Length: 228
Image (cartoon, rainbow, N blue to C red; front, side, top):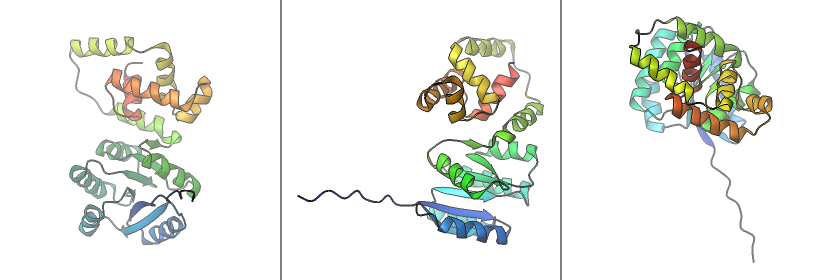
């Protein structure tokens, strides 16, 4: 009797968007060397790029929009409005923090610093493809601080009471995890700090999201900083 052969998983498909052709070509060549990834397109931010993405439906888009942040923000907002399940990893170089906050609000799945090495980029791609968010620890606090400077509408008294009720619903362990998230720690780091498994950390984080009615770590960090 023959042993069953495990099928080789299909590579995850990638489209690279960057107005800098030189960097884009280098990145595509490096990605082409990865057996688990397949670059199916590359372009600058244009109408042709929008059509290509909508037609090819890649698993992930690597987008470096910082040459023209305002114009390319509009591109990403339009793309997300037409494909709400789209997976976008932002590759940031010269964007200021306020622009990064706007990109996060537009629906990107993570931010990678262009100056970091390629191995870290591969790790970020894998995390985002696995359904996680990727935000550079060195950026997280400044992003939250910048988001806090955007004045929110004054909440009514009943909203403040509701916020306090939400915090009261967190367990001691969940409050510890919220504090570590605000400090910029990722899942692995939180697990080591608290001497628990990464799976347990993820379960706690999903529970926290539900109790506080937030959808990602940035919203969680901002919620925590606003309520001290």
